Image 1 (cartoon, each protein chain N blue to C red):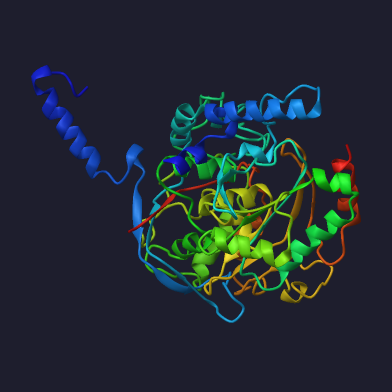
Image 2: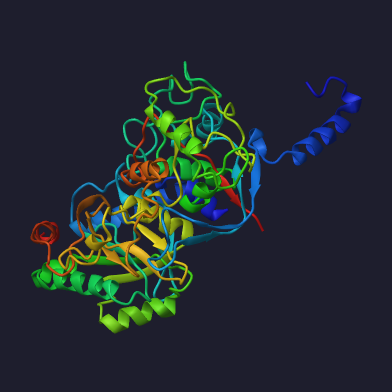
Length: 205
Length: 263
């Protein structure tokens, strides 16, 4: 039932979410000291996708868990041997390039393409292996249908192979505080300078 | 019209309930049972194997119509034109209809087009169904009226290529094309169709492009797939079209049909 609802109900039509968004919006307004809290999720925001996640601690989370902050979001799978570790290290390198205050404002969300095998324990293991800062990073899994929807919204291509591995495109997306896509990059070995510049501007106060 | 005589109303309701229960699905959608199969796909799953195996499932015999999609947007107003979020639909969404909840001059029994992948996905989910995968679609679409795999038949290919060459004709109603051996119609000759994994084609004309560019490293995993059976233009064109799409895109000749799992 829940999955069905989330499939046919964009976030703005769901009263429970709106109430929660209101509270978050209020918190955001307080955090900013002034300013007008955004009442609804923008039309083109990724947060229109109302999908439940489970994080690396096994706790329920929401796709907009970092709403109010700029977020790097990507999709991966835990047992990926080569490129996914590079994906993590690329995001860590983007982080390291930021001034400390800016880095503190950035959140990172990695959502699994492989909800069956990427249990919270597996996600926690990946996080530990790469030494990511779990105060700002979240590794999570979504339901299988929701993983496909999120990938569609992020223009990430993936397919599960007969041996259980995945082929997927690596795309790192920068979302603004309201979940709108600011910039995307597929470059891993060489840090995309344009992306780094947009990230720097987005995390500056 | 069932309750003319109050005394018999109960029986009528029972009869109606029984007749509804006997139908394959609500609103006249006819799902056909498709047996599992192993076949040579134009999109092999791995570089070392050409065969693809699909499990048994059910596929709607015809694409979703304007009338069916209208019932959906009336029940789920957040999917009406003008209300659906930009993340999910582009500006062309249902633009051929008279209004947000009315067909205007659009033919009720014609296949619905100008729908995004997100809208198609939501429609199927609301029916307790899902979009078929590319391989599920490809297998059923390989059949003709006599055999399950007609792809090597020049007549089969020519028929499809002939359709691709047609231009600018108004879409007729669904269900006019011949039923193939699975009892499924209109896979070719009417509209192109979304599949669940349209964004997973990962097509490159040359597999040396994949994995060899150290600056790109775009694909993770066992190496991206390359297309086999390059002489099969009819199917290649489908993939070329699908892989050029984004999930919010809508076009005038792209519709969809739903599938269901079988226990």
